[in-house]
Amino acid sequence: MKISSRRSFLGTTAGGVASIGLLGPTDARAGDPICPPNVCSLPPMGLFGIVRRQLLRVSVFNHSSPNVEPIGIEVLDAGGKLLGSEQIDVQPGGGAFADFDPAADLPPRDRMLVHVAVTGDVPVGATAEVYRRRSGVTEFPTTPCGTPAPEARMSHGSVGLTRRQAVRLSIFIPLNQFPTAPCGVRFTITDLDGNVLAQQDTEVPEGTGAALEWGPDSPNFPQLASGERLQIHGTVMSEQPESVATTLEVFDARSGVTYYPTSPCGLPLPPV
Image (cartoon, rainbow, N blue to C red):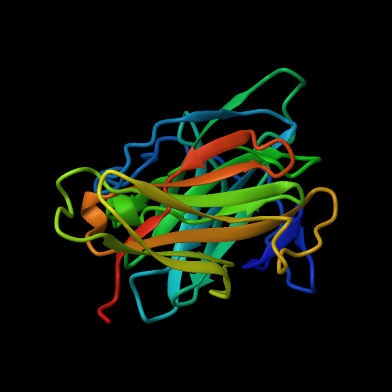
């Protein structure tokens, strides 16, 4: 088994980069706790449903450590049975993912409840995405339990884009947060190798917002085949990341319709 850190075609990647294989059910581990005692402090993930036409991708991103970090991923059912697990190494300033296929053997119209836990020596951002088996389109992202738990503004792992999807990073500065000057902001979209795909610096007055978009109309957006996915990570840097509101939004590049919003990572803006 190998990890992938870039883009994949339903479990395999383009450009010669290998993906983790799809994992089916493994031996039962009934009776084990779904989370260790110090997990689930942020966020308190319960269970979510998955059906046969859907796959599960769990991605992580390493913002906090200058070292390569080994990260464990476990997928369990509601009874604590281990459905799949993987150990991946995450580079500093980069990310990786593992794909799982827990519902492969379900009858049509049945659904399975699953829980995802991510563990390591340092907090990392992590995202669990349920996506369509054939088209690759993410149906929803959520945040798995993490040990140690990251700060809320650092809990984002990555999300996958297909060939007709775009991403928008946005910020809104509430009133009375920066009354004397605009807030300095830097939007950054990277791949899981840490390569910058789009970046913009701006200043945002209080009571207003700003956004950066990147998608198929951008000059450096790759040519994706049908069903192929490109994992991206969004970061919004600002002077006071704990005091601003940010959103990462994936939307249809043709119609403009939003598929889902989630939260990017929020970091302090480096001093000039």
